[in-house]
Length: 160
Image (cartoon, rainbow, N blue to C red):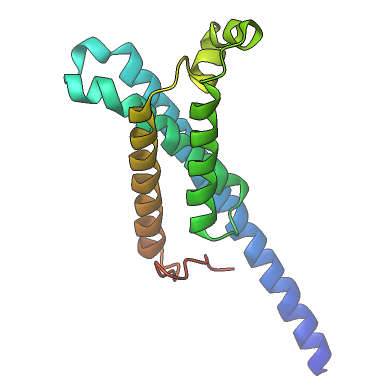
């Protein structure tokens, strides 16, 4: 009798975890899409925005999108995994811009290639990426607290 209850309890727990994963993935997908819209808006309406916003927010929002995308893929991992993973990814893309071969410059000349790979290396972009990712991570921490998911800064494992 006891093993039957454990079996039912485990199955119910798996179902709850699976629902949580899909809801969390949907929330992160929405965050990715909103971030994309804000980032494209910062480019399209740059002449109407304050100069500081127009110059810096696009890169920071790109890094935010990377963070939320990794969280969408790694919803059961620690928040710090997405933080470090997105920093590594963004920095790798930025450092790859030092490589200026004709074939990759041809890709960078396209709209999508330019948005993803960038055009040229700038140290200031590394700062913008770092700020964007840290802000995303802090928002993620805050949203998880509001949602009642127990996390701590030093042990930020999400509820499983």
